[in-house]
Image 1 (cartoon, chains in turn orange, red):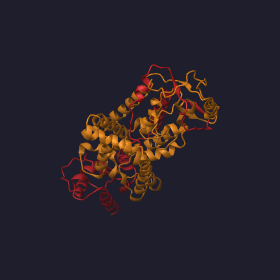
Image 2: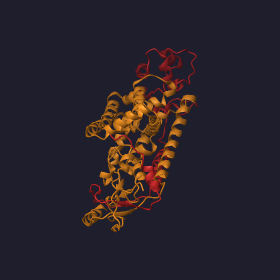
Image 3: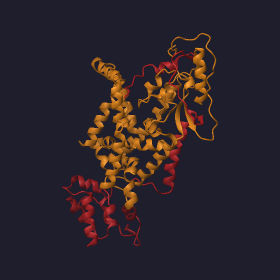
Image 4: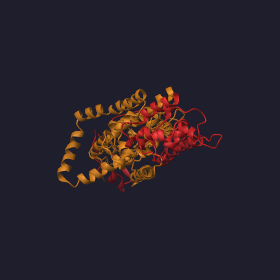
Length: 325
Length: 159
């Protein structure tokens, strides 16, 4: 679509005029956001019910609902026909499900279903609410936010994001070599499920570190350490679905960038195919332009998409962004 | 990393103005794609991506491939034998023993083993219910764990 959009850009730039674009309906973004939170809440309730049932009456463990176990046991299953400890066929089924979901919808699982991601989001929001009321902490957060936009921190952030792949390699290779789930010892999700049977362990330390970091950074575990997210990133490369930006309707207002929990510079992308995209649609919900960002399906059978933005010179060209009007 | 700074995006969509103006000189980085794309309504996106995994899981469940407890030995142990018991249909493999299995399931899977022997291995009181899971016995035992239990079972069954 943007081939045509770019031609339009050039002609308008030459004419030196502003463009009027339709505004997204009021509260549309809130509806998307609350729908997502409702689904996340339902998943948390389901897993919580499972975990409480396990502790109270020895029912099936919520671990049986962990898709990562399926990937960890894959080598052992293929070579010996057995699964490693703590892995049941339900984990294998969920692994397949997550792969299918990633191929269909990229990071949808992370953004809409993953309970650990939801908890990190909740902690981050609660952290912001609290730190905004405590002046010293608020100053610290603002200083961190200023630092976050520096080139130096971006480099560090980019480097740290390789951690997901290292953790994935450790989890899969470790399980293949030892026949046990080595990552389980450091898995914050396991620590959270076992919180009723408290035991000081590496997993508990990772959980606490994750929650403390989540006060300042959105989804720190997802960004830097989640092996399941790494697996989905790979499968998601095959997905035809992605958030797409229409350059002709983009206000370049940065609201999408600020809304993205994974800090993806959405306004520099045509299609957001970044491996860290969780498909949460926060960027789409934040976009004030009706056609600026949209979920799109790319298939060869489709005709080339045309920009819907009306190319009419503004009779009174604006001199500054009117988003806040 | 970008730490969040989302003070204004809610306000931006709440304004009654129906159009926005892209100002001069504020054009974004030019981008392009040669993909043929079609817009997907968000509601359809969400519903489809909730239905797809549900179908996959229910499909596997319908095929009998969903289990949230121990696998092969448990399955064998619960297979009724000719005398109506729950003995294994085929010789069980000690490598399949898992912490989620109960003492009774181990006894059923390995007919030459008694519950007393299993409890003794873990140093548990002999009046411990046979419905106790092995992982619970591991917690109260002094050094005995599931891998050691498997080794012991191999010795017992091969002898």
